[in-house]
Image (tube, rainbow, N blue to C red; front, side, top):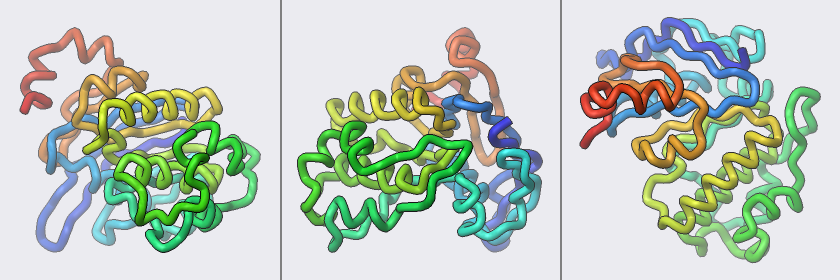
Length: 234
């Protein structure tokens, strides 16, 4: 398995947020972590990359136990994280933002260059010298993903990649994620948008109130409208 999470518990101060979270991601898989706002999706991602101080459990990445390692070491192992907040450098140009994310080639991951990323996200190729602060939300989302790929990760955590984007940009995001998969990147996507998840995912887990309440293929989820309606309907 590329990533295995076992018995993950996380706290923010006295508040217990995640309860024994467990899931797996295989080589070259796209896995969706589905749930409503506040279900614990972002906390799960932040816990995996070591950004939640109060956490326990076991996180295995490419056969290595990274449970107690700091964020920068986990990222150096090839685990990329794209937060929902985007966090680009607004004063830097597109090309400068990409250079910030550059890391050496990895033997177990695809190698990304600026030209390859501009082919993946043509919008970015048309604005190489534009400051990040003068880009739309969708363009900033693309730039955040592209900057993460400059680190040549073998697995990427994408937090709410379709949130707040126009339908046209969402289509481009679907194409980009499927291309990343073809290149050999394993991907975990946190989503509320079930239609978006269907277009890109091999399997899905549903999280509600910090607990996993379903795990299976997208077909298995579609065959259980009771589960879908109970945990994903607004």
